[in-house]
Length: 473
Picture 1 (cartoon, rainbow, N blue to C red):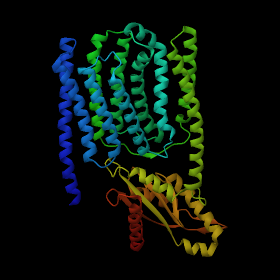
Picture 2 (cartoon, one colour):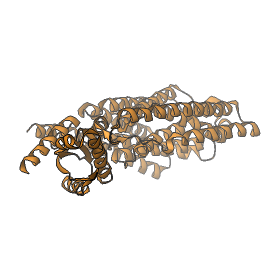
Picture 3 (cartoon, rainbow, N blue to C red):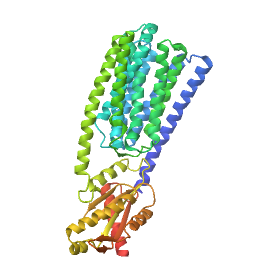
Picture 4 (tube, rainbow, N blue to C red):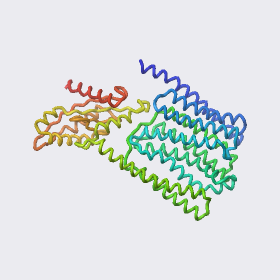
């Protein structure tokens, strides 16, 4: 009954979000039609329509933060970013010319900072053992891409738009920052090896569309395209990006996972920044590019050096910590701490991400008697043999909880089928000093979120199920 009441309370905000999202989509479609028919999409009505979309975006994100407890802090921060973006867009629309530097640019900068913080929190929520350097990467990618873009576009922007080096670099900064934000979303799934969920895809779409709008604007400011014709389309891209962001706030979160050590992310970005940072400096000298290009190229090299040093140190620390605290010394399998840490990641969203898992416990009946008969050293050999047999069959992490009890996580598949496969792996007797030892495993499992919603709760319910199975014979 309590769960039903919670669902009823949730249904009202969701219906409101759908209605506001539909209104926002209708406003964007109206802008597309007006721009296609008139060729400019200008006028007071269009300006009001444009800003209204950003009002809806900020409102939808804050509504999600207010009504859904899971990840609330993340969406409050992203909502503040959307609010800064709204005020900046209003200033650009009604007060300042978007082609000149204004207080709106400062607000856009604050919005990007808030978005980086919000996405960094998403990354830490999604990736177990996320390195501190990952939060630093968005800054490095932004500087790296701004350096490349400035080497190509800064001189044309300065000539065509009659702006300073700082103003021209700021124009290039926006699409570079958009691409950096998208890279965080891409990296989250890459770090864990888990597929992208709906929320990831919507966030990725938000920043790709935003990047497209900013790229069109920059090309117009450089004189490569018609800025007057492109400006309304850039505005529509920004509006669409905001609605994608709002939709992501309400979408199902993606499953979390542990960080995979040894991935491309350890050295790939560092090598890329180093190569292109050096290339920008060479191009700046060869073609006598503005000093801002030199500064950005040098900053890219400095950030590459800092990143390489930090990643090496943090990965080394992570490997040592995992080896010392997450591995069972006797069998080499994961220990209870490692298993519970993975379960905590998988159950972090309380089932709102659609995650359905089961904790399977395997208990070796009569193990204490075997220990008394064979001795503790032979018992240790027996446990290592059990871990060696169960490891290849277990669908997820195999952990030794304590004594003669092992456990694994079942994410996809039928727990009963998994139990049958584990039992089959232990069916053949284990030879111990010429003695054939027959193992008698007993299994029990608990499902998330049906049986329990915490790692400790799942372990208790699985143990109860295991005892029931033993009593039934």
